[in-house]
Picture 1 (spheres, one colour):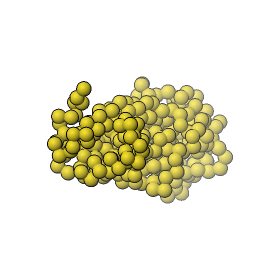
Picture 2 (spheres, rainbow, N blue to C red; picture 1 turned 180 degrees about the vertical axis):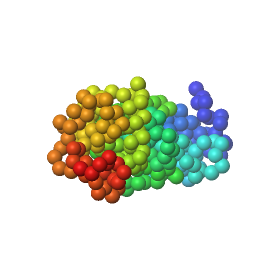
Picture 3 (cartoon, rainbow, N blue to C red; picture 1 turned 90 degrees about the horizontal axis):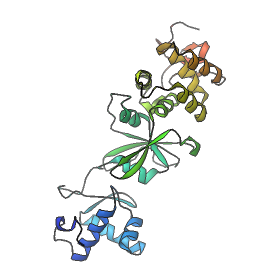
Picture 4 (tube, helix red, strand yellow; picture 1 turned 90 degrees about the vertical axis):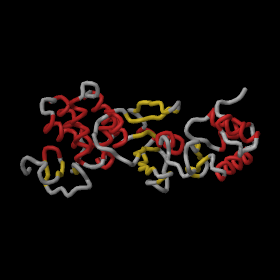
Length: 276
């Protein structure tokens, strides 16, 4: 049976190569690895790797990094193509992982900002935490395997990718505002979450924060709830009973010279209603 891709491939390839490549494209999604090629084409691993390398040299595939390739669209004028879906590449390269931080916030509509960098939280410990793959920059953060919770699966062209759900996204930002792009973005995401009947769930928010095990989250959350949702007295009381000893910063990246003693929280100028 002829593959739907066969007739679209130019005649520059030999007949056997055309059949093999079309079969590989038909049975993979987004990315191709030597292991997949060996299994699909029933070839020894070394031969499959050489075949992918040859097709890359001929311009049919583009190498993302060692052991991972993407198809070059037939309409492309060059093999130097951008990633069609960085989420799929993240799943292939960094799993176990999830899409989180500002990328998840953008996905769920928690922020109106547009971020060019893809934020990925992974249990792996990569040497390069800011790789640029075919023009797409990734920002990687290592997490414990026990931190892989609060995720929603999304399907990207038949590939299952995990993304932090809206509540987990907010908790991650409270744990590290850099994951949200800074304090202002983190606060905006929390305010959007507070206004959303679909996302707003204080029981889940507190449960996720407890499960994450970062006591500073409760200091930041309690302080911000007093400011932006003061009627949520139950959640505020939970934060007060659960926060850790010692002082923390609302945003570790910002100068913070004012201590809000009720929350053991150092805050930037303008964030404290009064010195305490």
